[in-house]
Structure formats: C-alpha cells, structure tokens
Length: 363
Image 1 (cartoon, helix red, strand yellow):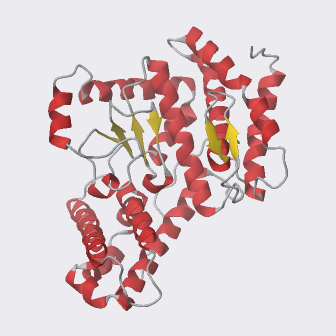
Image 2 (cartoon, rainbow, N blue to C red):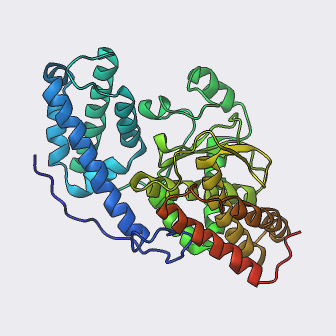
Image 3 (tube, rainbow, N blue to C red):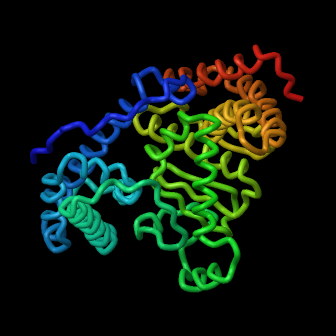
C-alpha cells in the first residue's frame, strides 16, 4: 500500500518555550508533521492486521475498500482526516478492543460497527476532496456530535435523550448562536492579548462542543483529542478566554504525550492542587501545572493588554501564579518525570522565574 508523503503548507510557530516545551522538535509545526504521519501509520497497521485476521468481516463491512480509498486520498485530505477527532477516537476505540493474537473476536458486532464507521469517515473525506471543499475552521456544536465522539465523552456527560435536550435548549437564552458569538469575541480578545495563542488555537482545537449542563467549566481528554467541551459556567468574556487557553494547552500536551511520556507510571500517588485543593494523580497534576503556567502568562499579559476586564485579569493572575512555586516544589522529588517531562518542567520553571524577576507580589 503506497501512501504519498507530500507535506502540506506549514504554519508559523509562536517560538515560545512554554508553548513548545520539549526540545525533541524545533516547532509545533514539526510536532504536528510527525504526529500525522505516525497516526497514518497506525491506521494502516490496524487496517492490515484486520484484513489479515478478519478478512471476511472486513469485506462485509466494506473496510477493505475503505482502506484502499484512504490510501488513494490526496495527502492534504488524508492529513485532515487523521487529525480529526472522530478518526483519533476511532484509533482509541480500536485500541480498546485489544485485538487478540489469533482470529477469535470477543465482540464481533462492535468490531463490525467500528469498521463501518471507518468507511463512513473515509467516504465523507473522499467526497469532500472531490468537491474541492476547503478545510473548515473550528466547528462549534452542541448535541449534534459525531457518533464516534459520542462513545468517548467526558465522565460527567452522556449523549442520551438528545431530542429532549435539543428541545429544552431551544427555550433557553443561552443559544448556540449566542455561544458562537461569544467564542468569536473571546478569540479576538485572545489575539489582542497573546497573538501566538490565537494562531495555534485552530491547529490544536478542531471542534468545540458546548454543553450548558456540563458539570465542569471545561474538559478534554486524549481519547477525543482535538475536541474540547465547554459548559455554561463562564460568566465573563475573560473566563471564556481562560477556558479556551486552558483547553488549548491540554491539546498541546496530548500531542507531546502521544509521542513521548512525560510522567512515570505512578498512578497510585495522589497530589492536592494548590489552586483548587482538588486531588489529582501524577498525570493530572503535571497537566494542571503546565496549564496554570500558561494561564499565568496569559493573565499577566491580559492585565496590561486586554481591552476589558483588566482588574479581573490582575486578580486571576495573582491567584494562578501563587500556586506555581508550590507545584514546582512537589515535582522536585526524583523519579516522577521522564527526561522529556523534565524538559517541560524546565519550561514551567522558566515561567515561574520570569514572573519572580518582575518583582510581582502574588498575594
């Protein structure tokens, strides 16, 4: 199976250590270039394994033809597909099936459904390529979410009773159109405060799902990477900016951790977040520390450059920055981080040192 390797247009990188904290790649562009080719290899590897072990099922589901169509897609179209959340969720779900060494299937119907879903994604991409459709910008959705993403939602939400939810949402003031307008305004404000974040945001966030009744202000996970969930909990434009920057930061780390681990396998150890008092495992704590370093930089800029909410930004900056020093002390213990993790920690430490050098009192 031959796959063309033509590289699409490159995007300008922000050149900031906290945004590109791992020295294994020269830029976020290079990281994304490596990742899409790696995911493409994963699709082909899983596909060839299925064709070898479950040829009859693959033929019945139209998977064999879909894999050939996938290989024949233009390189740019194939890249958009493998970078999309539904395809990344498909790879995650196929990994969850844990294909056995021999041809025995534990759940044939589930496998058949996933093979058909792959065919659906490829056919939609092929049709878009034939029509010459341009790459879409970040999508904003509510309950009309791809079926594969619906299978890997955040723990606090289940995609059920959708007709009932749609009818209920139609009678509320916080419409999807209003949310779309709010996000556009927040992204414009982010572009004023920290232009580099606004530039990379659509590279890492392809879909925003607005669920007003979601338990948390925002959430994301590696299993549906590229998509972020936002609730109705942001009560100001700056709060929405914070949620967008926060979740964009998670997407950067998901991409890095897709290629190299940052923390050691220490799942039993729990830590208390200095910002909220909530408990997290090592993975969650390290993610949070990176995100709050990013947010400290954003709020530090916002309190002098933002068009509105400057006082709120100053208060938020002090709240966020105050916990960084405590968090860094927690990671000084040997054996918690991998070499790549120590590179990221060095970038976070650099941020904390810069804030200190400004002689800012956090309290």
